[in-house]
Length: 504
Image: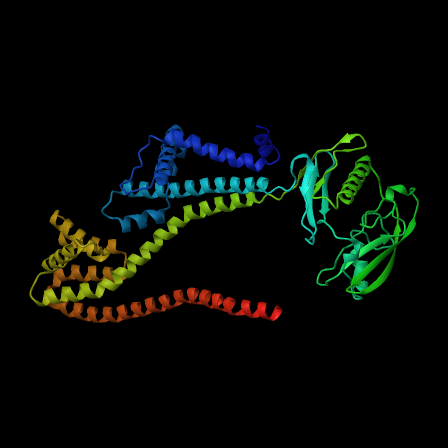
Protein backbone atom coordinates (compact mmCIF):
# COMPACT_ATOMS: atom_id res chain seq x y z
CA UNK A 1 0.00 0.00 0.00
CA UNK A 2 2.88 2.36 0.80
CA UNK A 3 4.49 1.70 -2.57
CA UNK A 4 1.15 2.33 -4.27
CA UNK A 5 0.72 5.70 -2.55
CA UNK A 6 4.34 6.63 -3.31
CA UNK A 7 3.83 5.75 -6.97
CA UNK A 8 1.04 8.32 -7.39
CA UNK A 9 1.78 10.91 -4.69
CA UNK A 10 4.38 13.06 -6.45
CA UNK A 11 3.38 12.42 -10.06
CA UNK A 12 0.00 14.00 -10.87
CA UNK A 13 0.21 12.91 -14.51
CA UNK A 14 0.11 9.29 -13.35
CA UNK A 15 -3.22 10.09 -11.74
CA UNK A 16 -4.39 11.47 -15.09
CA UNK A 17 -3.31 8.31 -16.91
CA UNK A 18 -4.94 6.10 -14.31
CA UNK A 19 -8.12 8.19 -14.47
CA UNK A 20 -8.23 7.82 -18.25
CA UNK A 21 -7.81 4.04 -18.00
CA UNK A 22 -10.45 3.91 -15.26
CA UNK A 23 -12.77 5.86 -17.55
CA UNK A 24 -12.15 3.31 -20.29
CA UNK A 25 -12.93 0.49 -17.86
CA UNK A 26 -16.19 2.17 -16.81
CA UNK A 27 -17.09 2.80 -20.45
CA UNK A 28 -16.36 -0.82 -21.30
CA UNK A 29 -18.67 -2.05 -18.52
CA UNK A 30 -21.44 0.28 -19.66
CA UNK A 31 -21.05 -0.69 -23.32
CA UNK A 32 -20.36 -4.42 -23.01
CA UNK A 33 -23.90 -5.37 -24.12
CA UNK A 34 -24.05 -3.01 -27.09
CA UNK A 35 -24.20 -4.42 -30.61
CA UNK A 36 -21.18 -3.80 -32.84
CA UNK A 37 -23.44 -2.71 -35.76
CA UNK A 38 -21.22 -4.13 -38.48
CA UNK A 39 -21.01 -7.28 -40.57
CA UNK A 40 -17.22 -7.19 -40.75
CA UNK A 41 -15.22 -9.72 -38.75
CA UNK A 42 -13.60 -7.96 -35.80
CA UNK A 43 -11.03 -9.06 -33.25
CA UNK A 44 -11.94 -9.10 -29.57
CA UNK A 45 -10.21 -5.75 -28.95
CA UNK A 46 -11.90 -4.15 -31.96
CA UNK A 47 -15.29 -5.37 -30.72
CA UNK A 48 -14.69 -3.85 -27.28
CA UNK A 49 -13.82 -0.41 -28.66
CA UNK A 50 -16.56 -0.65 -31.30
CA UNK A 51 -19.14 -1.23 -28.56
CA UNK A 52 -17.77 1.81 -26.71
CA UNK A 53 -18.18 3.87 -29.89
CA UNK A 54 -21.77 2.66 -30.30
CA UNK A 55 -22.53 3.52 -26.68
CA UNK A 56 -21.07 7.03 -27.03
CA UNK A 57 -22.99 7.57 -30.25
CA UNK A 58 -26.25 6.63 -28.52
CA UNK A 59 -25.42 9.04 -25.67
CA UNK A 60 -24.84 11.70 -28.32
CA UNK A 61 -28.28 11.04 -29.83
CA UNK A 62 -29.90 11.32 -26.40
CA UNK A 63 -28.01 14.57 -25.80
CA UNK A 64 -29.36 16.01 -29.07
CA UNK A 65 -32.92 15.09 -28.12
CA UNK A 66 -32.56 16.90 -24.80
CA UNK A 67 -31.02 19.99 -26.47
CA UNK A 68 -33.11 20.76 -29.58
CA UNK A 69 -31.09 23.91 -30.27
CA UNK A 70 -28.10 21.71 -31.16
CA UNK A 71 -30.05 19.69 -33.70
CA UNK A 72 -28.10 21.43 -36.48
CA UNK A 73 -25.14 19.19 -35.55
CA UNK A 74 -27.00 16.29 -37.12
CA UNK A 75 -27.64 12.73 -36.02
CA UNK A 76 -24.46 11.59 -37.80
CA UNK A 77 -21.87 14.42 -37.66
CA UNK A 78 -19.79 14.05 -40.83
CA UNK A 79 -18.20 16.53 -43.19
CA UNK A 80 -20.06 17.17 -46.43
CA UNK A 81 -17.15 15.95 -48.51
CA UNK A 82 -17.02 12.69 -46.56
CA UNK A 83 -20.74 12.15 -47.20
CA UNK A 84 -20.28 12.63 -50.93
CA UNK A 85 -17.27 10.29 -51.04
CA UNK A 86 -19.16 7.59 -49.13
CA UNK A 87 -22.12 7.87 -51.46
CA UNK A 88 -19.79 7.49 -54.45
CA UNK A 89 -17.83 4.53 -53.07
CA UNK A 90 -20.84 2.61 -51.71
CA UNK A 91 -23.88 3.55 -53.81
CA UNK A 92 -25.63 0.24 -53.10
CA UNK A 93 -25.55 0.70 -49.32
CA UNK A 94 -28.20 2.73 -47.56
CA UNK A 95 -27.15 6.29 -46.83
CA UNK A 96 -27.69 6.20 -43.05
CA UNK A 97 -26.03 2.82 -42.73
CA UNK A 98 -22.82 3.72 -44.56
CA UNK A 99 -22.46 7.09 -42.82
CA UNK A 100 -23.02 5.56 -39.39
CA UNK A 101 -20.52 2.77 -40.08
CA UNK A 102 -17.88 5.27 -41.19
CA UNK A 103 -18.43 7.48 -38.11
CA UNK A 104 -18.21 4.47 -35.77
CA UNK A 105 -14.99 3.37 -37.48
CA UNK A 106 -13.48 6.81 -36.85
CA UNK A 107 -14.59 6.79 -33.21
CA UNK A 108 -13.25 3.25 -32.73
CA UNK A 109 -9.83 4.21 -34.06
CA UNK A 110 -9.67 7.29 -31.83
CA UNK A 111 -10.73 5.33 -28.73
CA UNK A 112 -8.09 2.66 -29.38
CA UNK A 113 -5.32 5.23 -29.75
CA UNK A 114 -6.50 7.11 -26.66
CA UNK A 115 -6.34 3.89 -24.65
CA UNK A 116 -2.85 3.16 -25.94
CA UNK A 117 -1.80 6.73 -25.09
CA UNK A 118 -2.81 6.33 -21.44
CA UNK A 119 -1.51 2.77 -21.08
CA UNK A 120 1.89 3.43 -22.67
CA UNK A 121 2.35 6.70 -20.80
CA UNK A 122 1.56 5.06 -17.46
CA UNK A 123 3.96 2.23 -18.29
CA UNK A 124 6.72 4.66 -19.29
CA UNK A 125 6.23 6.61 -16.06
CA UNK A 126 6.25 3.41 -13.99
CA UNK A 127 9.55 2.35 -15.55
CA UNK A 128 11.16 5.41 -13.99
CA UNK A 129 10.31 3.99 -10.57
CA UNK A 130 11.89 0.68 -11.51
CA UNK A 131 15.10 2.41 -12.62
CA UNK A 132 15.65 4.32 -9.38
CA UNK A 133 19.18 4.24 -8.03
CA UNK A 134 18.35 5.42 -4.50
CA UNK A 135 17.36 2.37 -2.47
CA UNK A 136 15.94 1.91 0.98
CA UNK A 137 17.55 3.89 3.81
CA UNK A 138 19.27 6.18 1.30
CA UNK A 139 21.64 3.54 -0.10
CA UNK A 140 23.08 4.15 -3.57
CA UNK A 141 25.22 1.52 -5.28
CA UNK A 142 28.51 2.99 -6.46
CA UNK A 143 30.09 2.21 -9.80
CA UNK A 144 32.98 -0.20 -10.07
CA UNK A 145 36.64 0.92 -10.05
CA UNK A 146 37.47 3.03 -13.07
CA UNK A 147 33.85 3.89 -13.92
CA UNK A 148 32.87 7.49 -14.56
CA UNK A 149 31.28 9.59 -11.85
CA UNK A 150 27.50 9.64 -11.75
CA UNK A 151 25.38 12.75 -11.33
CA UNK A 152 22.16 12.08 -9.43
CA UNK A 153 19.36 14.64 -9.10
CA UNK A 154 17.76 14.56 -5.66
CA UNK A 155 15.05 16.52 -3.94
CA UNK A 156 14.54 16.92 -0.22
CA UNK A 157 10.98 17.40 1.01
CA UNK A 158 11.64 20.71 2.76
CA UNK A 159 14.88 22.08 1.33
CA UNK A 160 14.44 21.59 -2.37
CA UNK A 161 16.70 20.12 -5.00
CA UNK A 162 20.28 18.90 -4.73
CA UNK A 163 22.80 17.59 -7.18
CA UNK A 164 24.91 14.70 -6.01
CA UNK A 165 28.01 13.83 -7.99
CA UNK A 166 28.74 10.28 -6.88
CA UNK A 167 32.14 9.01 -7.80
CA UNK A 168 33.01 5.41 -8.50
CA UNK A 169 35.08 3.38 -6.07
CA UNK A 170 38.40 5.14 -6.36
CA UNK A 171 41.99 4.08 -6.63
CA UNK A 172 44.75 5.96 -4.82
CA UNK A 173 45.61 9.56 -5.64
CA UNK A 174 48.66 8.40 -7.65
CA UNK A 175 46.25 7.10 -10.34
CA UNK A 176 44.97 10.53 -11.31
CA UNK A 177 45.57 11.55 -14.93
CA UNK A 178 47.12 14.70 -16.28
CA UNK A 179 46.00 17.96 -17.82
CA UNK A 180 47.71 19.63 -20.81
CA UNK A 181 48.99 23.18 -21.04
CA UNK A 182 46.12 24.37 -23.24
CA UNK A 183 43.79 23.81 -20.26
CA UNK A 184 45.38 26.88 -18.64
CA UNK A 185 43.57 29.07 -21.16
CA UNK A 186 40.20 27.32 -20.72
CA UNK A 187 40.02 26.89 -16.95
CA UNK A 188 39.29 30.49 -15.82
CA UNK A 189 36.12 30.66 -17.92
CA UNK A 190 34.97 27.22 -16.75
CA UNK A 191 35.82 27.84 -13.09
CA UNK A 192 33.72 30.97 -12.63
CA UNK A 193 30.43 29.08 -12.97
CA UNK A 194 27.55 31.52 -12.35
CA UNK A 195 29.89 34.23 -11.06
CA UNK A 196 30.78 37.19 -13.29
CA UNK A 197 34.51 36.43 -12.91
CA UNK A 198 37.00 35.03 -10.39
CA UNK A 199 37.36 38.41 -8.69
CA UNK A 200 33.68 38.49 -7.63
CA UNK A 201 32.87 35.02 -6.31
CA UNK A 202 29.78 34.57 -4.15
CA UNK A 203 28.40 31.23 -5.39
CA UNK A 204 29.99 27.85 -5.96
CA UNK A 205 32.84 27.58 -8.41
CA UNK A 206 33.11 24.90 -11.04
CA UNK A 207 36.34 22.98 -10.44
CA UNK A 208 36.18 20.30 -13.10
CA UNK A 209 37.92 16.98 -12.84
CA UNK A 210 38.32 16.95 -16.63
CA UNK A 211 37.79 19.09 -19.69
CA UNK A 212 35.69 17.97 -22.60
CA UNK A 213 37.74 16.88 -25.58
CA UNK A 214 40.97 16.58 -23.58
CA UNK A 215 42.15 13.34 -21.92
CA UNK A 216 42.98 14.99 -18.60
CA UNK A 217 42.10 14.60 -14.94
CA UNK A 218 42.52 17.58 -12.60
CA UNK A 219 43.10 17.55 -8.83
CA UNK A 220 42.36 20.76 -6.93
CA UNK A 221 43.66 22.20 -3.69
CA UNK A 222 42.51 25.34 -1.92
CA UNK A 223 44.68 27.70 0.07
CA UNK A 224 41.73 28.39 2.37
CA UNK A 225 39.60 25.23 2.35
CA UNK A 226 37.16 26.44 5.00
CA UNK A 227 36.13 29.22 2.61
CA UNK A 228 36.48 27.46 -0.75
CA UNK A 229 36.99 23.70 -0.70
CA UNK A 230 38.59 21.53 -3.34
CA UNK A 231 35.24 20.79 -5.01
CA UNK A 232 34.46 24.46 -5.57
CA UNK A 233 31.90 24.86 -2.78
CA UNK A 234 32.06 28.44 -1.59
CA UNK A 235 31.20 29.14 2.08
CA UNK A 236 30.71 32.86 1.74
CA UNK A 237 28.48 32.81 4.83
CA UNK A 238 31.68 32.78 6.94
CA UNK A 239 32.57 36.28 5.78
CA UNK A 240 31.25 39.48 7.36
CA UNK A 241 28.78 41.50 5.31
CA UNK A 242 31.46 43.80 3.89
CA UNK A 243 34.21 41.19 3.87
CA UNK A 244 36.39 40.12 0.96
CA UNK A 245 38.91 37.28 0.99
CA UNK A 246 41.28 36.09 -1.71
CA UNK A 247 41.82 32.35 -2.01
CA UNK A 248 44.57 30.66 -3.95
CA UNK A 249 43.31 27.64 -5.93
CA UNK A 250 45.91 25.23 -7.23
CA UNK A 251 45.25 22.74 -10.02
CA UNK A 252 47.55 19.73 -10.36
CA UNK A 253 47.65 18.45 -13.92
CA UNK A 254 49.24 15.09 -14.64
CA UNK A 255 49.66 13.04 -17.79
CA UNK A 256 51.81 9.92 -17.76
CA UNK A 257 54.97 10.96 -15.86
CA UNK A 258 54.57 14.70 -16.48
CA UNK A 259 53.14 17.12 -13.99
CA UNK A 260 52.20 20.79 -14.12
CA UNK A 261 50.92 23.12 -11.46
CA UNK A 262 48.55 26.03 -12.21
CA UNK A 263 47.46 28.69 -9.73
CA UNK A 264 44.36 30.90 -9.81
CA UNK A 265 43.23 33.62 -7.43
CA UNK A 266 39.56 33.79 -6.47
CA UNK A 267 38.18 36.76 -4.51
CA UNK A 268 35.24 35.61 -2.34
CA UNK A 269 32.56 38.12 -1.35
CA UNK A 270 29.43 37.46 0.76
CA UNK A 271 26.02 36.86 -0.77
CA UNK A 272 22.53 37.49 0.67
CA UNK A 273 21.83 34.83 3.29
CA UNK A 274 18.63 33.17 4.45
CA UNK A 275 18.00 30.31 6.82
CA UNK A 276 17.03 28.08 3.93
CA UNK A 277 20.29 28.93 2.14
CA UNK A 278 22.29 28.13 5.25
CA UNK A 279 20.53 24.77 5.66
CA UNK A 280 21.10 23.95 2.01
CA UNK A 281 24.81 24.57 2.47
CA UNK A 282 24.89 22.41 5.57
CA UNK A 283 23.04 19.60 3.81
CA UNK A 284 25.34 19.84 0.79
CA UNK A 285 28.37 19.74 3.10
CA UNK A 286 26.95 16.69 4.91
CA UNK A 287 26.38 14.94 1.59
CA UNK A 288 29.94 15.74 0.52
CA UNK A 289 31.37 14.49 3.82
CA UNK A 290 29.39 11.25 3.53
CA UNK A 291 30.70 10.79 0.01
CA UNK A 292 34.29 11.24 1.16
CA UNK A 293 33.88 8.90 4.13
CA UNK A 294 32.39 6.08 2.05
CA UNK A 295 34.64 6.44 -1.00
CA UNK A 296 36.19 3.03 -0.37
CA UNK A 297 32.86 1.33 0.37
CA UNK A 298 30.44 -0.33 -1.99
CA UNK A 299 27.45 1.78 -0.95
CA UNK A 300 26.77 5.43 -0.24
CA UNK A 301 24.22 6.41 2.42
CA UNK A 302 22.47 9.77 2.26
CA UNK A 303 22.53 11.76 5.52
CA UNK A 304 19.42 11.30 7.70
CA UNK A 305 19.82 14.36 9.91
CA UNK A 306 21.54 17.76 9.87
CA UNK A 307 21.46 20.11 12.90
CA UNK A 308 18.74 18.00 14.54
CA UNK A 309 16.55 18.32 11.42
CA UNK A 310 15.46 14.99 9.96
CA UNK A 311 15.94 14.81 6.20
CA UNK A 312 13.89 12.88 3.67
CA UNK A 313 15.42 12.55 0.19
CA UNK A 314 13.87 11.13 -2.91
CA UNK A 315 15.36 10.78 -6.34
CA UNK A 316 14.48 13.45 -8.90
CA UNK A 317 13.67 11.87 -12.24
CA UNK A 318 12.62 13.33 -15.52
CA UNK A 319 9.22 11.90 -16.39
CA UNK A 320 8.64 12.12 -20.14
CA UNK A 321 5.37 10.21 -20.02
CA UNK A 322 3.23 13.40 -20.36
CA UNK A 323 4.86 14.05 -23.72
CA UNK A 324 4.20 10.46 -24.77
CA UNK A 325 0.60 10.82 -23.62
CA UNK A 326 0.17 14.05 -25.60
CA UNK A 327 1.81 12.61 -28.71
CA UNK A 328 -0.40 9.53 -28.64
CA UNK A 329 -3.52 11.67 -28.17
CA UNK A 330 -2.47 13.86 -31.09
CA UNK A 331 -1.88 10.68 -33.10
CA UNK A 332 -5.40 9.59 -32.21
CA UNK A 333 -6.83 12.92 -33.38
CA UNK A 334 -4.75 12.76 -36.55
CA UNK A 335 -5.98 9.24 -37.23
CA UNK A 336 -9.56 10.36 -36.59
CA UNK A 337 -9.38 13.15 -39.16
CA UNK A 338 -7.08 11.22 -41.51
CA UNK A 339 -9.89 8.80 -42.29
CA UNK A 340 -11.57 11.58 -44.29
CA UNK A 341 -8.37 12.05 -46.27
CA UNK A 342 -8.05 8.28 -46.79
CA UNK A 343 -11.64 8.22 -47.99
CA UNK A 344 -10.87 10.91 -50.54
CA UNK A 345 -7.80 8.91 -51.55
CA UNK A 346 -10.09 5.97 -52.28
CA UNK A 347 -12.12 8.29 -54.50
CA UNK A 348 -8.96 9.20 -56.42
CA UNK A 349 -8.11 5.50 -56.85
CA UNK A 350 -11.67 4.88 -58.05
CA UNK A 351 -11.41 7.65 -60.63
CA UNK A 352 -8.07 6.33 -61.87
CA UNK A 353 -9.46 2.80 -62.14
CA UNK A 354 -12.50 4.07 -64.07
CA UNK A 355 -10.23 5.97 -66.45
CA UNK A 356 -8.25 2.79 -67.10
CA UNK A 357 -11.48 0.89 -67.87
CA UNK A 358 -12.94 3.66 -70.04
CA UNK A 359 -11.17 2.70 -73.32
CA UNK A 360 -12.39 -0.92 -73.01
CA UNK A 361 -15.97 0.17 -72.35
CA UNK A 362 -15.96 2.62 -75.28
CA UNK A 363 -14.46 -0.03 -77.60
CA UNK A 364 -17.08 -2.59 -76.61
CA UNK A 365 -19.90 -0.11 -77.12
CA UNK A 366 -18.56 0.78 -80.58
CA UNK A 367 -18.21 -2.93 -81.43
CA UNK A 368 -21.76 -3.82 -80.36
CA UNK A 369 -23.29 -0.78 -82.05
CA UNK A 370 -21.41 -1.63 -85.23
CA UNK A 371 -22.88 -5.14 -85.02
CA UNK A 372 -26.37 -3.63 -85.07
CA UNK A 373 -27.26 -3.76 -81.37
CA UNK A 374 -29.14 -0.99 -79.64
CA UNK A 375 -27.40 1.00 -76.93
CA UNK A 376 -29.41 -0.61 -74.16
CA UNK A 377 -28.68 -4.08 -75.54
CA UNK A 378 -24.95 -3.19 -75.69
CA UNK A 379 -25.10 -2.09 -72.06
CA UNK A 380 -26.73 -5.38 -71.11
CA UNK A 381 -24.03 -7.42 -72.90
CA UNK A 382 -21.26 -5.50 -71.11
CA UNK A 383 -23.02 -5.85 -67.76
CA UNK A 384 -23.67 -9.59 -68.12
CA UNK A 385 -20.04 -10.23 -69.10
CA UNK A 386 -18.88 -8.34 -66.02
CA UNK A 387 -21.24 -10.29 -63.74
CA UNK A 388 -19.51 -13.49 -64.85
CA UNK A 389 -16.09 -12.06 -63.99
CA UNK A 390 -17.36 -10.73 -60.66
CA UNK A 391 -18.04 -14.26 -59.45
CA UNK A 392 -14.25 -14.70 -59.17
CA UNK A 393 -14.03 -11.74 -56.78
CA UNK A 394 -13.27 -8.97 -59.28
CA UNK A 395 -14.83 -5.59 -58.52
CA UNK A 396 -14.67 -2.67 -60.96
CA UNK A 397 -16.40 0.61 -60.23
CA UNK A 398 -17.25 1.56 -63.83
CA UNK A 399 -18.96 -1.76 -64.53
CA UNK A 400 -20.82 -1.56 -61.23
CA UNK A 401 -22.28 1.76 -62.36
CA UNK A 402 -23.31 0.14 -65.64
CA UNK A 403 -25.13 -2.59 -63.72
CA UNK A 404 -26.84 0.02 -61.57
CA UNK A 405 -28.00 1.91 -64.68
CA UNK A 406 -29.42 -1.34 -66.09
CA UNK A 407 -31.29 -1.98 -62.83
CA UNK A 408 -32.76 1.51 -62.98
CA UNK A 409 -33.97 0.96 -66.54
CA UNK A 410 -35.46 -2.40 -65.54
CA UNK A 411 -37.19 -0.64 -62.64
CA UNK A 412 -39.04 1.71 -64.99
CA UNK A 413 -36.71 4.76 -65.13
CA UNK A 414 -36.55 6.20 -68.69
CA UNK A 415 -33.42 5.27 -70.61
CA UNK A 416 -32.29 8.88 -71.10
CA UNK A 417 -32.64 9.62 -67.37
CA UNK A 418 -30.74 6.42 -66.50
CA UNK A 419 -27.84 7.52 -68.74
CA UNK A 420 -27.87 10.97 -67.16
CA UNK A 421 -27.74 9.48 -63.65
CA UNK A 422 -24.96 7.15 -64.80
CA UNK A 423 -22.80 10.13 -65.78
CA UNK A 424 -23.47 12.02 -62.54
CA UNK A 425 -22.64 9.03 -60.32
CA UNK A 426 -19.36 8.31 -62.07
CA UNK A 427 -18.03 11.80 -61.19
CA UNK A 428 -15.43 11.49 -63.97
CA UNK A 429 -15.38 13.88 -66.90
CA UNK A 430 -14.95 11.12 -69.54
CA UNK A 431 -18.04 9.26 -68.32
CA UNK A 432 -20.02 12.51 -68.18
CA UNK A 433 -19.13 13.00 -71.83
CA UNK A 434 -20.17 9.42 -72.58
CA UNK A 435 -23.48 10.04 -70.81
CA UNK A 436 -24.13 13.04 -73.07
CA UNK A 437 -23.33 10.97 -76.15
CA UNK A 438 -25.72 8.22 -75.06
CA UNK A 439 -28.55 10.69 -74.54
CA UNK A 440 -27.88 12.21 -77.98
CA UNK A 441 -28.00 8.72 -79.48
CA UNK A 442 -31.62 8.40 -78.42
CA UNK A 443 -32.39 11.40 -80.62
CA UNK A 444 -30.00 10.99 -83.60
CA UNK A 445 -29.62 7.20 -83.92
CA UNK A 446 -26.68 4.79 -83.88
CA UNK A 447 -24.95 5.87 -87.09
CA UNK A 448 -23.80 9.27 -85.85
CA UNK A 449 -22.90 7.86 -82.44
CA UNK A 450 -20.78 5.03 -83.89
CA UNK A 451 -18.38 7.45 -85.56
CA UNK A 452 -18.08 9.54 -82.39
CA UNK A 453 -17.46 6.43 -80.22
CA UNK A 454 -14.69 5.21 -82.53
CA UNK A 455 -12.95 8.59 -82.27
CA UNK A 456 -13.51 8.63 -78.51
CA UNK A 457 -12.01 5.12 -78.21
CA UNK A 458 -8.88 6.20 -80.06
CA UNK A 459 -8.43 9.26 -77.86
CA UNK A 460 -9.13 7.32 -74.65
CA UNK A 461 -6.40 4.77 -75.45
CA UNK A 462 -3.93 7.62 -75.80
CA UNK A 463 -5.04 8.98 -72.43
CA UNK A 464 -4.78 5.49 -70.90
CA UNK A 465 -1.16 5.22 -72.04
CA UNK A 466 -0.47 8.54 -70.33
CA UNK A 467 -2.00 7.25 -67.09
CA UNK A 468 0.03 4.03 -67.29
CA UNK A 469 3.22 6.06 -67.79
CA UNK A 470 2.37 8.21 -64.76
CA UNK A 471 1.79 5.10 -62.63
CA UNK A 472 5.16 3.74 -63.69
CA UNK A 473 6.89 6.98 -62.68
CA UNK A 474 5.15 6.95 -59.28
CA UNK A 475 6.22 3.34 -58.70
CA UNK A 476 9.83 4.28 -59.48
CA UNK A 477 9.67 7.18 -57.03
CA UNK A 478 8.34 4.93 -54.25
CA UNK A 479 11.25 2.55 -54.80
CA UNK A 480 13.74 5.32 -53.99
CA UNK A 481 13.02 5.14 -50.23
CA UNK A 482 13.97 1.45 -49.75
CA UNK A 483 16.94 1.94 -52.08
CA UNK A 484 18.25 4.84 -49.97
CA UNK A 485 17.74 2.78 -46.79
CA UNK A 486 19.69 -0.14 -48.31
CA UNK A 487 22.46 2.27 -49.31
CA UNK A 488 22.65 3.61 -45.74
CA UNK A 489 22.86 0.07 -44.31
CA UNK A 490 25.60 -0.81 -46.81
CA UNK A 491 27.60 2.30 -45.88
CA UNK A 492 27.34 1.43 -42.19
CA UNK A 493 28.48 -2.14 -42.86
CA UNK A 494 31.52 -0.81 -44.72
CA UNK A 495 32.45 2.20 -42.59
CA UNK A 496 32.06 0.75 -39.07
CA UNK A 497 34.58 -2.11 -39.51
CA UNK A 498 36.98 0.28 -41.26
CA UNK A 499 36.67 2.81 -38.42
CA UNK A 500 37.14 0.16 -35.74
CA UNK A 501 40.16 -1.21 -37.58
CA UNK A 502 41.69 2.26 -37.84
CA UNK A 503 41.10 2.97 -34.13
CA UNK A 504 42.54 -0.41 -33.19
